[in-house]
Length: 385
Image (cartoon, rainbow, N blue to C red; front, top):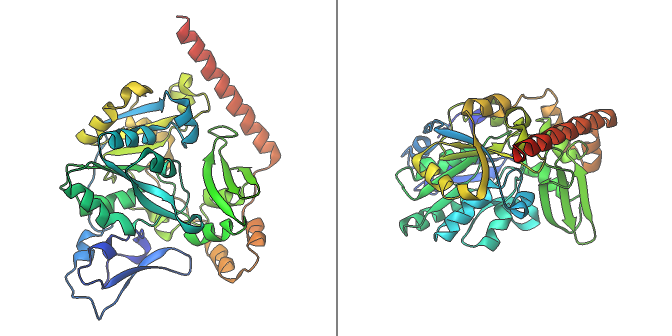
């Protein structure tokens, strides 16, 4: 049974969920990415996996309105990757008796999707996780909550959101929130990286110790706190250079107007060119509303936001990942070949991570500071008008 083109498979796991015969299992390949394995002896040939696969069938929700925004609550904003919008939307759903599903951490800091009904549980789902999350285990659970008439907010990559939409497309209680995706790194690379930090207890891929634009990797262990800028951290450097991404990310099916979500969130990189007064280096989100219910949920939290309307095309122009797949580096296959053979992961990281030079970092920090000061000047000018 061929479900979809192998090179386009996003590993969403929906095929495993919908198979009535239990003939499909998601298993990691030699690069660490999960792929469907079909037991032909169990397969009844119903074709449901192929019909539901989001690579083959997907809805398109075009932008209705778009905003630059960030929460007025500095505590939420500080703990978020960008402007704290997801946290507010999720809290609103919980307040109304709904549930929230998103990427959290499992054993050994493996990234997996979880469902929460509490504010305490929500904290784990906030913040970016630069690893492919396993969402297979919660698809059916979402349906149980929807049957109860409860609102479900599902947050994930565009491919995962498209899978959930295909599974529960007729549900009025389902709100789907995706983000502009750079690509998903291999869980195997993350697993090996975490082992470099014995007794690791928590990980933050977008720590704002050095600001929003110079985010840092932070890993808390039982004995120390590791913190390293995105310009130097080997895991982030390999990710940002596209070396360890899933093969389908280089020809992603969810670019341009192929989003199936109600709301799309992203970092508003380039905010200083659009609304310089909103650039204080604490994080500003781009928000794209794609449906009536997405707009209604956003409207419910508007009073808690600083926001300004913007044309969605500006967001697409500034954030190239909106419409373009990641470029496949020539060294990708060499990297994974080395990963399969390597026993000293530290040496592998040194070979491939290529930190940005100190001179370049200084230049970028000067530019960042200049933009921040310009933003402050704009805010002061508005205050004293």
